[in-house]
Image (cartoon, rainbow, N blue to C red; front, side, top):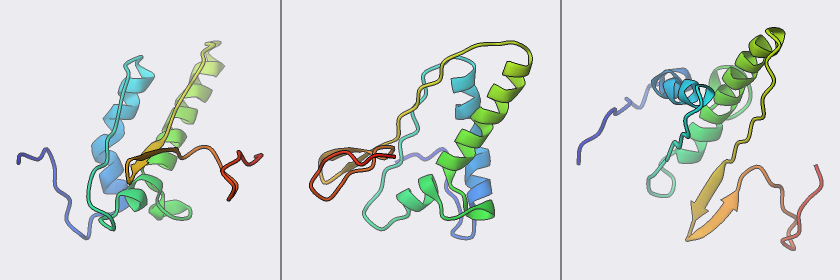
Length: 112
């Protein structure tokens, strides 16, 4: 296998986001972007993507949303108008789950 980047176990969330933040900028520039996190159960994919809490432990998703909203605020101050769409999906045991939708235990949608 050939890898673009391997992070040391001591690498923090900020280091990982710095490596992928150019994907966020590409999306802001109008390109379709997909960041695919793959690995065995328990390897840290969810922690890397979502993180925990605020501050230094935020994962890629909250950092990307923050970068997008900062750019959006700048563009709105310059009288830009735009529409943003995002999806955060997970494939687990061959089931596709939308991580932005909250579900009740009976499978129905939970109100936000």
